[in-house]
Length: 127
Image (cartoon, rainbow, N blue to C red; front, side):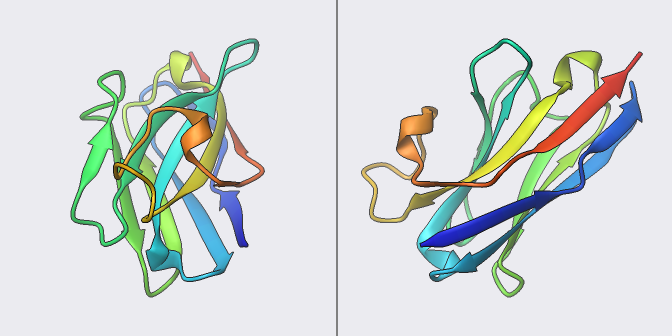
């Protein structure tokens, strides 16, 4: 069992920055690739970015590439999402999720590819 707790969300003006954190507890953090998803009101949850268990590989969707950066600190059992140049369309609840290193393929764009989820943190970008 892995418990995930996100933090760092809030209200920010367009063009601003936020840094989300996701703290993990339970089973070994390095046994999981870690991802961020987001869900805007009335929309399906969508994949944002993922980082491999050792931090060597990342994948980020085009809509946020160049603005969002994922990173992790295995010593602190924490994954981060640095969000810069925020836009109003980035407004959503942001979730972190864990994917076992035993999964087929190191990343998945689908929510079904992740076993553990945090409770989410709200990010609101005002114009």
